[in-house]
Amino acid sequence: MTSAIYFDGHSARMYQVLLQVVADRVELHGTDLQKTYPRADTRLAEPFAAAPAVLYFNDGGRCEVAGPGREELAAVLGYRKSWVVRWQERWLAALAALVLLVALIVATVFWGVPAAAEKIAAALPASADAALGKSALEGLEAKRILNATRLSDQRVEQVQALMNRIVPAHPRVPVRLLVRASDALGANALALPDGTIVVTDQMILDILDKNDDFDDSGAAALTGVLAHEIGHIERRHAARVLARTSLTAALSATLFGDFSAVAAGVPAVLMNMQYSREMELEADDYALALLRQHAIAPGPLADLLEYLGNMPGVREQRNMPRWLSKSMAYTSSHPSSEERAARLRAGAPISAQPAADPSGSPTAHSSRP
Image (cartoon, rainbow, N blue to C red; front, side, top):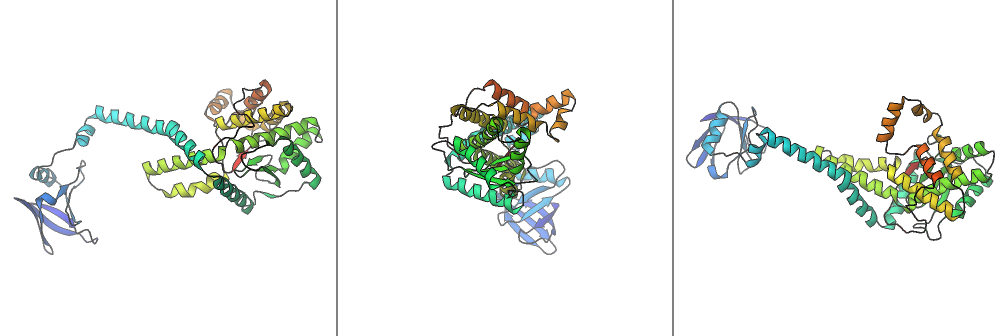
């Protein structure tokens, strides 16, 4: 017989009882409570160091036994440690299990999740592209991140003419151009999954300032920007990133709880899409192939990348100590402007053919080409 605390499983009330195991039954005796349970229908939970022993009953009730009575209760009930408990009590076995768990998580994050995300993105219908693109654009406009262009209609028509020149004959989705003002994005371009390409006023003005007007060099640079964004759309990068991010969030929620982060994170991903280093280079390769197809030199695009890389905010990182900037470059998910420019000038190996019809389905992306 030992002192215990009993909960009936239906209320928060706590009963002070004496617990006694007699033959084939477990008896509870208290001032306000008298209960008897079949011994065969009781279960002793796995013990934890100094924590109370917990005895569960088939009607949802439970008893907690603290102090020295725990060991005696386990002995009387014939409790035998499971192989998991015996394993975790041996530090070498526990260490091996920890190493295997970490290896499994790493393999899942770096290989399992990307592979699953590719299959999910490939299975998304075209209607998903349209819905995601519409949602992203509405969100950017609602937050006043994108506003009506301040450029003339003539200037917008010039940009439209440049894009019309390079749009694939049979694009995966219809491609359309929007020119918008955006103080928040600065000189930038966005590729939405529904085929919408947004170019900011500042991007166009930076090219004009650099070349005074749309001369051959400026036209080639802006055409390269548009080709890069078409590459993101054709390769369905946004859907692949969204699927990967959602799966990673679901994995994190499974491991650490709080599944609300999975659903809540999707709008944030749509609004702050950033592609991986591999995808950015793939879009560059696609742009290079498209430029070659139309006999447009990639040099002006490379010059533009270096020009944007030297803008305030980006330039500060270049002034860091060499060892620090190098370490940041290795851990960065995006290749540097210098690296991308060098690849374009060297005629990087083409990993994407403009006429190809890839499978997958994107979201919203902010890309500084």
